[in-house]
Length: 71
Image (cartoon, rainbow, N blue to C red; front, side):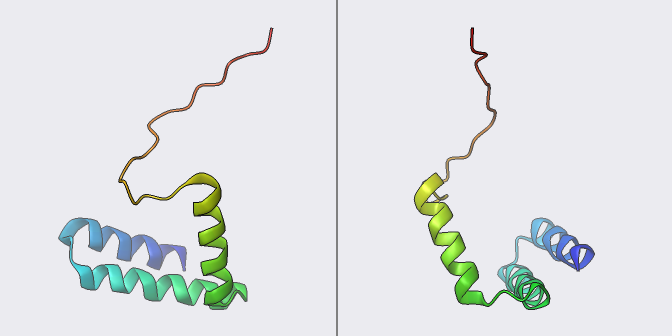
């Protein structure tokens, strides 16, 4: 299933076509079925993560992280 996910992602990145994005969603839903996770549970996980760590609504993304060592 991961190969199919990668294939659909590559097609979307190549063509920037919304239909390819829909294919990605179909593969994602199939993976959830295989893992025994219903879509509502997945959506709850996504919303919780977005609440805790933020989402991409402002299109910012992290480039790098540095950790300070404790002295």
